[in-house]
Image (cartoon, rainbow, N blue to C red; front, side, top):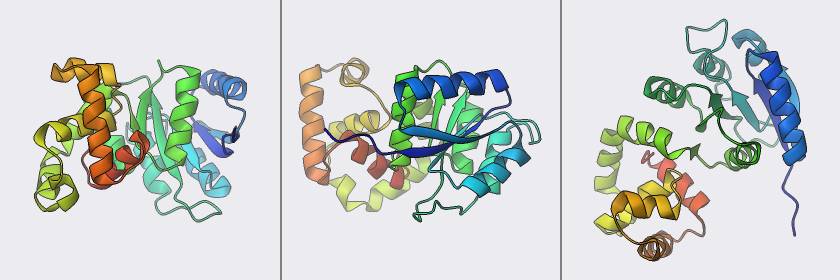
Amino acid sequence: MTSPRPVRLVLVDDHRIFRAGVRAELAEVAPQLDVVAEAGTVDAAVEQIRQERPEVVLLDVHLPGGNGRGGGDVIRGCAGLTTESGAPVRFLALSVSDAADDVIAVIRAGARGYVTKTISGRDLASAISRVADGDAVFSPRLAGFVLDAFGAAAGEIAEVDEELDRLSAREREVMRLIARGYQYKEVAKELFISVKTVETHVSSVLRKLQLSSRHELTAWAMDRRLL
């Protein structure tokens, strides 16, 4: 079995004890995630990120030194920054807030995902690794805010997207929910269909779009602003 690839990580949060807790938890459940630097303010974060050029920045939304949503200021301060391999530095928001305004603001700034601080250590590690690989990561509730905020743009793209046109109306519904992070049981409950039917639709969607996993599906939907 192949070991998970190493990911260099900068941890940004204004609470030192919280940063210590996250560092300790990740060291226990995912030693391949290497926290190379920490910061507690907007200016310090930008400086550390520019110096370290990590694969992923784990970023609180509200930071001292910003305009009330300092996380967005950090992302804008690192616009265009790449890792040593040439990949973009990616940002995953980790916040106590699940307010729609906070979620939408940090995604507009350029974050690749958003999870709340109620997340488990293992799920957080998985989210970081997925973001490092280019996936978009949201909890189902938070992804709904993003879909609603960018719905108009998604509709415009859908009109001229030949790949999307291959999907039936029901397959599009299933595709959006799966790409937003819903599990099969949650999709079934949301759409009032069976889990088996969900599985059938997902297989059909992946086949029609020539994708191999739900992670690829999420990236595909993100590229078309369907999330």
